[in-house]
Image (cartoon, rainbow, N blue to C red; front, top):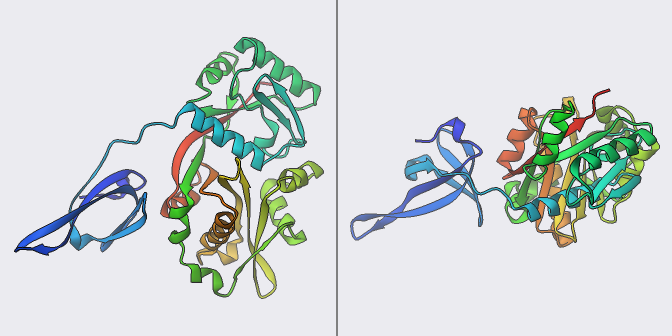
Length: 321
């Protein structure tokens, strides 16, 4: 039988669905286990979420992990994520991207080494260091794995440090939208979407990210399709979020999902995500992604329940001073 350590893994479930001719009839389902209680288990499948009573389960087992995404799929998603978080200062090194935003967030202030840098790898890393030195910033490189593993090896050789690993997670919107009941967005504390952040929204973001320089406002707003989610209770902003549609209209990017401490454990984060998913679906998007630190157990658990799975990981590498 399944155990809690199977959460987040792909499993196959055979369940009893009826009786025919005096014999039990079975049906098989394959998906990721996102919830396991004493009475039910819940899978995310290609057809959507499936909740199965434990009493109907004949047998269940974990199946081998799905194959890693292709290099092309990783590049597509990384470029969609870059488009969703646009640094105001940008340059190219062959196919690599160099990005700076006055030091505000690692994503907007690191090189993205996807594709060919148009020179040998050691020379490319030297060029990255010169570019950041010219902008008065420490050199950082965002290494999607396993795509940028060779870059990581070169940085290891030079003694670059690593920040905590980040999970890049995805889910089809057809799975994500049913994960939160539509009427959950119509209760007290309903989600309001705006094309620009309010002053209160910016204050919450500043508190989370340690300030909000002018470059940060560019990162947040310089996207063609963007929505800022607000939840007010009794006139007080208690939850925020941001959604973008990028990658030729395919990807909803979710970020800055934040619920203030006094309003937590009321499902507000899920409501925010549902509202942004509905908006993105209406805009033609088919999939969602987000980036979450692997150590953020609470957020990882929430996203797992909503059907997100890890597409790949990345490390932000920092040059030694």
